Length: 311
Ligand code: NAP
Image 1 (cartoon, rainbow, N blue to C red):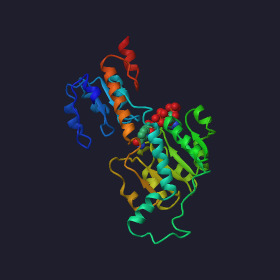
Image 2: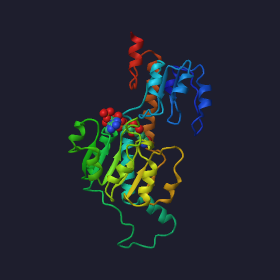
Image 3: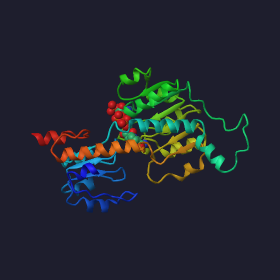
Image 4: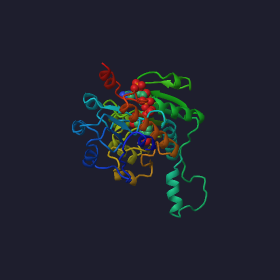
């Protein structure tokens, strides 16, 4: 904000909630740029109403809240914050993995309820992590970060992505088909962006291929999983558990999850560290400033808009 104020008059939403689409549209009347949060939906209809906005600086790496095609057609630059949140999100994925495997959240609930009656050898047995196989779906920055952490735990790493990733290969990971990954893995971590190919990528069929002892971790986007299929599988213990940071209808969370002890639920905390938030703020500000100064921003999603305007 300090950076932005050096150049622009800045209107800040100081409330701990996303402003409504109607409020946002009013605020953007006459504005040249917007630093957008995930709850702000820039769909085609909304974008068509923007008159003066030249840059949507998304405060996230996953820009699925913006219809990039519609923005591009309107000559609006879309930017995001890749890289600066990789470690924090990979930490979160691994945190959820450990919490689900070792029943940490469930154990916390038990202690708080005064139900801890003393150590016994068969109490709350979980799943060993070290030496197991992890399957990473989406081998980009965060997927590679998850693999780096998995290597530290002596895990075998397999991954599924659209192309080979030499960084993952150098960690000893192998590229496999999606089906092989689902059949072989003890843990599956979702690290793809949400797009038309990945929406519903993990449904009933895919969950059916997983081991009964498998734990599914999602720090990507809720819509990558068919939540109904996941809830049904967790209820019937067709898989052992899940660790979720993201949901289909955020901030609403399907209440069926609340009744299940074999799922760990986090409120979209992937990038929520002080250090990462500072880096995201700086990058999103630098992106907006660059576009409005007529320069190339550090992280651009639709460079074709700039190329068109250079012709
Ligand atoms: P990234 O570096 O772009 O990695 C995404 C990877 O997924 C790329 O390797 C990409 O392959 C692959 N991919 C894309 N579509 C695919 C498909 N249909 N099938 C298989 N692989 C596919 O992105 P990132 O920085 O790692 O971030 C990944 C996602 O994490 C973000 O988009 C965001 O939704 C989510 N995220 C969540 C949080 C949180 O708070 N929970 C925080 C940060 C990010 P190509 O190279 O072929 O495109």
